[in-house]
Amino acid sequence: MSTTRLITAPERAKKARPSKVSHPDMPPRSIAPGPVAKTFGIIALVVATLYFLVPVYWVIVASTKSNSDLTRTFGFWFAEWNLDANYDSLMNWTQGLFWRWVGNSILYSTTAGVIGTLFAIMAGYAIAKFVFPGKKLAVGIIMAGLLLPVALLTVPLYMEFQALGLANTMWAIIIPSAVSPFGVFLGMVYAETSVPTELLEAARIDGASEARIFFTIVLRLLSPAMVTIFLFIFVATWNNFLLPLMMISSAELKPVTLGLYGMMSYFAPQKGAVMLGALLGVIPLIILFFSLQRYWRSGLAAGAVKG
Image (cartoon, rainbow, N blue to C red):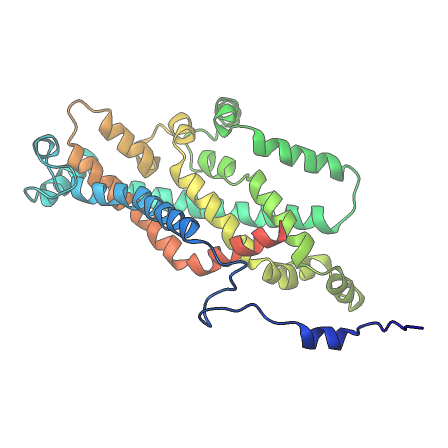
């Protein structure tokens, strides 16, 4: 009578053979991309790189040209150096307010980013970790806010701020820009997976208040999400055009986007000066992204895994 013997896990491990690879740094053949996929991947990366870098290079070249050089010379190469004249034209047309406009954009974007990030993290943490009446309704309203176009709210917002006497003030831009349904959603996703409930319960047993738990524990755990939310709000506020156009009428309060629009709407503008203004106006964004790149990439990677 034949008997059967079960193969134990250690015996199976001894018989298992790893996939053969041609180089220690190369992945196994079963998951390594083929030559066709690798070629298409490289082509896609090159196209994406050119798509993002070519406009920046063109703005740099165009900012050194006069109006005549922009039309009679090759667009992607330098002509007669006209950078100093363009800068003088930019300062003269703006009556010396250009750098103030840049400062206004930095002030609006930074303030809205800080306030919006704090409130988004608070709301997301509360929805993820607390049970309260109307929780599902609140989540539904936030999801609906993600689908609602921002431009659709500009006219009602203007009417409300006009009635409150806040039109043509800095708060007319900061307060609407600080509201971020996407930031609340992202904070909710992060808080649900990155903040252990056991840690919160242990802090409550030790006598810590909810405010102390949030500001000393939760904010540290959600720092990658905070950086990501801050960058999204900062860039959205910086690039916002319709809201300042409706709210701001004073030249001293204009952001740089609205100021450059006024320069382009002028009869026969110096386009090289406008390009120089656009180049100088985007430098703070470049500095911010390079400064927070490490935190931003880690935040997006963590959010992709958690989602």
